[in-house]
Amino acid sequence: MTISDPVADMLTRIRNAVMVRHDAVLVPSSKVKVAIAKILKEEGFISSFEMVKGKTHQDIKIQLRYDENSEPMISGLERVSKPGLRVYIGQREIPRVAGGMGIAIVSTSKGVMTGQQAWHKGIGGELLCYVL
Image (cartoon, rainbow, N blue to C red; front, side, top):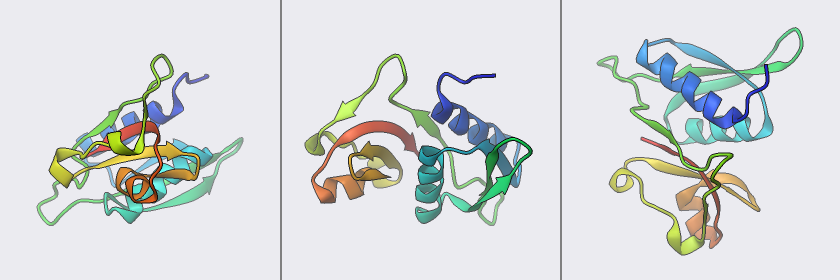
């Protein structure tokens, strides 16, 4: 089965796993998805991720993170740029998410990074998603 928007599929899988309080979720692998998982790990939204070899392809196993009250660290994931409507932003247009409590993930010419990192480097790009 082909997926028209693999990044949205990844975000939906994570969102669904968080809603039912799963410990981990498997997502088909790609370079962009690995970069997003790396950012989520660095920002403290997930515990860890690892590459898992499947029969035909590689998957990313994402360990979800919860606080001491079993509340998920990820309270919201929102896809911004979609295949039907790409959203590109300049350095001055990078949004603050939830007053600085969330992050924006941006795909730039220097790689996938948070909005804050892109702002510090003075570059813009495609606004992939928001994480709260």
